[in-house]
Image (cartoon, rainbow, N blue to C red; front, top):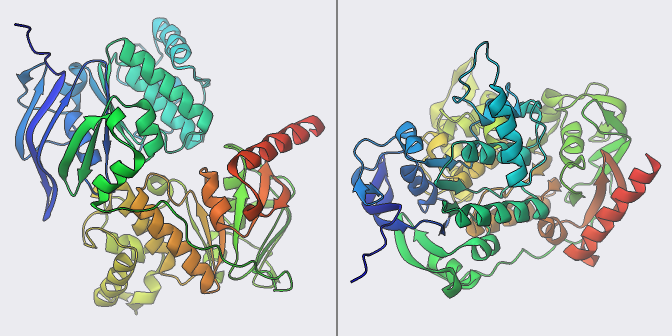
Length: 507
């Protein structure tokens, strides 16, 4: 009689509670050598919590975790790493002041004077070649775009000779080409016997890369099946307990050009790479910025929001030239920005949802310097409910919430000010299909109320479906205006690559 194959990792009866919230309930899960086992579910379903228990970040309240068939006692990230289990978290844990190379080998230096051993430098290049990345080892991590920071996290996991890697939303900031690179790397790792726990909201990627898929809902395992037995529709039904079509709200009608612009950029340049950019957003209009990753979309948006100092050209808002345009002036005038990186630029993770929502507009709740907690709580509760936060408990620390609920808290923070114009930079990054529908509806509702919207998304179909007008962006400049209703994603990519070539030829 053949001996049964012993899983690399097995979980039995795992339960976890955070305060009054049951995050996981009686979860069983096996992970075998050389397989990709994906976890899918809505935000708050417990996917990331389960991944963190595997990696030792969280300890279960009940249940047993086994490695190679043997139960572990105390389990934490250090012990997990010694056993070859590491995690690439959705919210990256890098040291921004250090270089790429230093982050990859952090804690493994074994050097004098803070210098890496020569063999580690050589190993960095071997790791990078295997991963098919092109990172500068001497670049400061804080200066990298989020997609490249994710690559640093992946290299850091590889440097520790991991045999189990938990990847939580590893493709959330990557381009299509970079996703293909990652999937090829995952294939190589599995061929070498490594096992991957893959947590993602991108269901196409899940189907492409997985061997088995576990569907979760409200902290409970709904089922585990071979990837070949699942479809996008079957996974969505399992996640939600109902059918949900992946659709966008009806497109808003175009705003007439005779309407006075709310925001105008005229020949704007900044020290962050924007060069002679022009932009117009009218009240009630959804305007998109379309470009390849690194094209300067976010930099143009940051100039519009007063975050990056304008060194040339003019900014006009509300019918007036803005001689001094900075974040404080923009917020006071009614222009706010929902940033791409909610942790570094948007939220105070140790503070509650209520405090985060109220943070930018405390003067609305204070009298003679004393904050009215009752008014603050009432308004925060109203926004949390309107944004469908689950659970809508505004006194929980925002850092303990799922990525989707954190994003909703960030949206609530800026909607509290009743803005005239909102800049959305990657508003659906790392959120599930249900939360995406909520955010799409919110964007369209804002425009219907006369709020101007400037929208950036690496999921180009979001801009094409929601915007009534969009600017092509390349190398920090606006390179033409398109009608999104007349474009498909393939046609758009053709345009973007041709724009890149034309500007490169004249540079």
